[in-house]
Image (cartoon, rainbow, N blue to C red):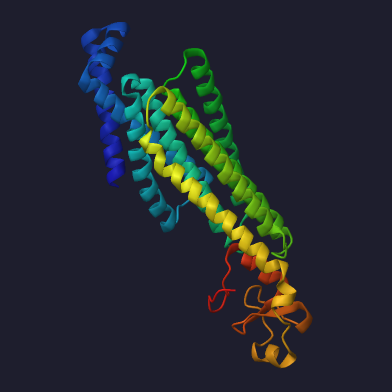
Length: 333
């Protein structure tokens, strides 16, 4: 309710300003000059532009995503604060180039980041949901396709600007949009893996292997992009302190994924030798139900962990691809 009151007041103020300017100046060109040179006019028009952008964002959100969950709203609040602060810090490197066009690009960047975050959050949500309507799938694919197309357009445009005019603030925006493009492509491929797994009723044993390689390639690509951006900014402008955190996080994520992969390979390579098959009596004590897939177990298709918990071999392999602890008691495998 408060937002709609604020929006109405902002748009009314903008309309009143335009009417006042035209009445007092009588001609189009003097009116435009006044609107773009008066500080009050720029403030009112800028505020109205932000309101219209927010309304457009809400329209897209309603069309592609519907009602947001509480977790998604909380995610937006956390990420927007960080993204705005980080981008403003980055723009200080290009403070001599800040203009109206740069602020429009900044607004577009934050706007697109919001929908990238929502796409990722929604994919994670549907992976944990049993029944998803076909319309939801169509909307989500449409949103990801639109974001990928817009990201690609901005990357190409910023690249052309840098090639034509040399190093400038477009380096920053070009790399930001490139990171978004890598993110949305990885998100879409993760969605494809989910759809394939759903077609197999969740029995696709290689899903997490492909998911691991997807995440690994995504992290490596982001790390390369960050390193190239870091070197370019350092060469032409000085130390880019704002990117040090992202660069460090990318390196740590890559290191963690590689370490996790080698632990997984070590566990699964000798799975049959390390863990014995359970007896019929031991299966009877567990009601013969695997808690990972909720299906019935037989002695030949199961393994007993050192903590005495029993699972399907394939379920255990899929589980240790994500974490190397017992699904029941969390003891180290």
